[in-house]
Amino acid sequence: MAETQTRTSGWQVAGSAAESYEAYLVPALFRKWATALVDAVGVSSGDRVLDVACGTGAVARSVAARVGATGAVTGIDVNPEMLAVAERASAGTSPTPVFRQADAQALPFEDGAFDVVLCQQALQFMPDAAAAVAEMRRVTRDDGRVAFSVLRSLDHHPVYARFADALAKHVGSTAGDMMGSPFALGDREVLRAFAAAAGLRDIEVRIEVVSGRFPSVEEFVWYEAASSPLAGPILALTEDSRRALVEDVEQFLEPQTDDAGVSLAYETHVVTGRR
Ligand SMILES: C[S@@+](CC[C@H](N)C(=O)[O-])C[C@H]1O[C@@H](n2cnc3c(N)ncnc32)[C@H](O)[C@@H]1O
Image 1 (cartoon, rainbow, N blue to C red):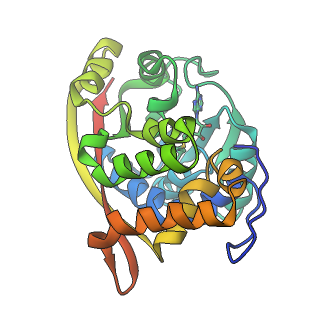
Image 2 (cartoon, rainbow, N blue to C red):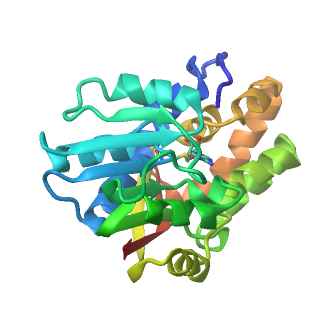
């Protein structure tokens, strides 16, 4: 997500993909998902919390208010650009989360170092998600809590299936595949098996539905693109091709379009367990 973009011809200028992610997708979606995840796991004053694959820190900031001055929040991510934005965005948060670069599949913490370990919308991007869940359990104290959230499959998000098709048609098959990747770990029994294999107890899988809002179809396309490596290929399109992409998306988003823009429902599995 290091790519720097500029946007021309009526599309606003954006900075890095990490900055766009924080500016666009966190308010539209990830902040709402963070509240659902933290509510599901339950966090108490004084808890030490780890946010695995923290991105720009949406979960870390959401949980900080719950742990209070006697608690502590740590976030890890592999992507230094995401971590740099997380630091800036969390500067006024109390307690201020500590961010560091690390791989979720090999966490650099002692066994049992945290009371609560969370991971939001990231396991689907890891080569060995089962190893990451096992690591989350390892660094949780006895009787501590673990929770992770992963979007349900494209079958439950037909709008994104059509968006992936439109990107494949106008931008290329790699772009289409990329838009499908957040939905690639959508089977709840696979997630339950990860939690069980890691040795978690009291496992519960819930479906949470969160509504996301975008000011217009064009901004929906841009929010998704600017916050990912799709920005470069979309900006490289001719003005006519970009318009054709937006027109295609406008057609299938018509039922989701109202006077305030576009309203979409996102279905996520939230898995909770106890060490
Ligand atoms: C869609 S973002 C979600 C970020 C954050 N959890 C949130 O809710 O905003 C996925 C994140 O997973 C991170 N990631 C992917 N593979 C990782 C790994 N093996 N270890 C740590 N972070 C990883 C990416 O860098 C990215 O920040």
